[in-house]
Length: 422
Ligand SMILES: C[S@@+](CC[C@H](N)C(=O)[O-])C[C@H]1O[C@@H](n2cnc3c(N)ncnc32)[C@H](O)[C@@H]1O
Image (cartoon, rainbow, N blue to C red; front, side):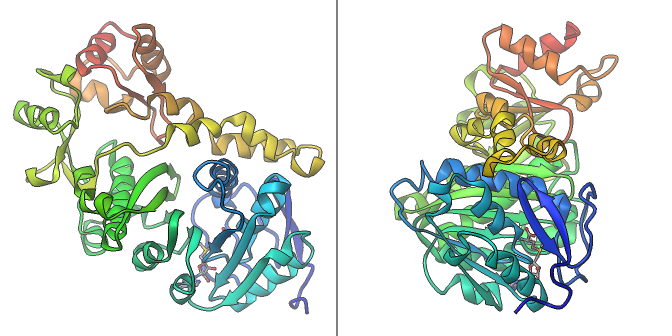
């Protein structure tokens, strides 16, 4: 039976027409209130678009050979994420999904149920009203989506316990003020970490989240590999590959440590000897350096414990091009809606190109350069990246939410280029 108010009003995201009880402003940004039964936040549409593209790539790479991809959309609200998977993925991929949708909110689930009833692959989805924590533990999953209000921490251990031998876990965190160091109390309380609130504070927040995921995975004999880490306005989102591996779990702390702003010469030496800065940075003083966990630095400028390794998988990131995002807006043989195409392209901007430099040790927020090195004004991240590439280094404008570039060039080369006025 359809819920009171059905069919409500149509809301278009990607190529999926989703029915909701009240009109939603497609261009609204930022967090949404919790009060509406038919909860749907258009500001999360980019998050869902990336989720479609990731599943498209990972179904045929990390999850290749899995005939039935056991998937849990554990906080599904009105179910638009699952519906976008079903409607926008190629048919062969979408038909491999076996999705459990779960939410505490009965009204939201009623809308989910009625929407799904009209989907050709809706029969591959089951719905449960209840607590995601219980549902997560009900079986092993290949794909777990955690999309709570606030922090994903209450769900993390359960999710890691509930992964199949190999699985993908995607989690959103809307407690951005905590993770980026503006609310030090909740950050310490929830994540046992601190974050120095400079230009890289959101990158540090993503890395705190990754460290939390790695630690939770290790508790359950699993190891993570970061696939995609994105700061998108009011929320942070990380997606990790989780493999069962006792030996990997034993060494997880090798990828956890600290970030120090304005590091001393001694810090730089320590970072190099720990493999956290390349040898070619010897003798320079980068804006930031990572230190191993046992360094336990103190004083201002310190963030951590956080993930010190690479924060994304180059293969996956390369697959997330603007062209690929446009293509999903032409799925279902529909004529692309130009506004949706614009939203979709924006959702992945710079991700595919940044793949070329994701291994680089330096993520540089260009607005911070004049304060650190002196000089007239911030350079363009595009010209800095272009200049470094012309010298043979990997360098790309970053997806990060501040004007920035990522590079594997020596810090001294970055400084020289900046001083030459790139
Ligand atoms: C941010 S919304 C999810 C949005 C949804 N994933 C989407 O893309 O539209 C958070 C949802 O989590 C649900 N929720 C919160 N705590 C929960 C829990 N412990 N178990 C199940 N659902 C929960 C809320 O009812 C709400 O619908």
